[in-house]
Image (cartoon, rainbow, N blue to C red; front, side):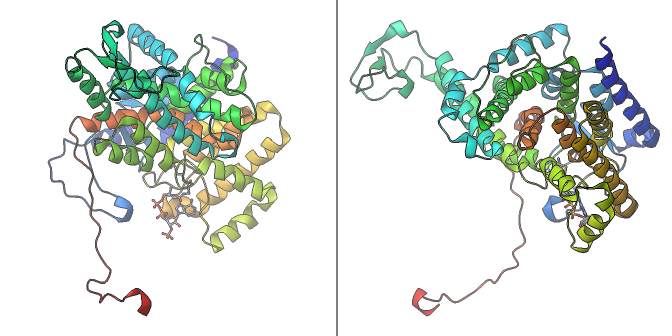
Length: 470
Ligand code: ACO
């Protein structure tokens, strides 16, 4: 094993060891509950805090312990011993793949990473002026178009059996260039309808696991392409020899990454792959629950992830550290932020009231990469981050359960790998698409449309005032 690769694994193992000493494993197993008997009684706070909406076998987050489990496997073990592809497969299918399944899955991802048509469409938009997450969201919509067409093509008849017609009743992609009218009609239009309908229905019901693979592969290609286009370069085709993390870095930079960079990115992707019923996962599930399709559903997840209270916080953290500018200013800056009731980005979590296990891994990785880079600005920001962590934890750790979350150190880590800050949240999406798709698939098995209620506290009977009298 190369030395650098080993270094990274050792960092993860050390972080895991430290965390495990603080986590009481016996308590964790006693938390896992029996199947829910509906209707379930739970205390619900604003923002649906505490509400139980479904059962899941995908992932478990212990907020009190600061523990994260995917399908029964501890996040630290997955980081230390597996790859993003194995984890994505695990989330979707319930078990770690054997060598054969993994190889099939990787081949599928390699195939789906090529998105020439989607990228051509995407490049018709002014991406250089757009928010990267907006561009990514649009890209998944364009992927949908591609996949819809692909599905319909698969279910379509042999073209030799079609005849020319003046009838304007066929799919637009059948149109031959230069013709003014639709030109094909099936000899027996009814003969193939069931298959075509089925393809469409599968897609609409978001059951197609192929669409999930397509999205997992494609969101990465889109992210890399957006990163390049926004910096004035053209997208690069994926390299079929490389894995998911390496391809992401390669398609962004045009250079094959070092084994160390690949490993770090792989761990970052594993850490972000799933996290309970967080806002973006819930958004994706709500959309899927209407029997819309998985592409719309993932687009909604991307939209929700963009917010600064969610995935957008990693970009905000770097802004905060730059705003503080000097490690000596941490105390003064913090006092003023508290006085102004300002939220400190990268701290706090709806579920974790203990140290976020993902931050436990990301903090030493950021430290390692920043110190290795020798970059003075990065070292300065790291010092500020460490000072801010000490300050926030001393003040709000014990009293309010506020500790660094996954977003606090990820930005520092990515920037030390040369990744521009506007790509931090899209990279989060590259990873989380595995959790989104897995949870949507799981929920669709016993789908019920999401429909909470609100308590009406407005007026109930106002007399209508005509416009002229208002
Ligand atoms: N800085 C300072 N105080 C905080 C912070 C913070 N980052 N987070 C929570 N608090 C305080 C609140 O001011 C509030 O105090 P109060 O009781 O005196 O009013 C209390 O803790 C509870 O805060 P809420 O906002 O009600 O907690 P909630 O569970 O709704 O929000 C959230 C969780 C959104 C993550 C919040 O902690 C936050 O805004 N953090 C900063 C943004 C951030 O880092 N987001 C990334 C989260 S991880 C992820 O989504 C991938």
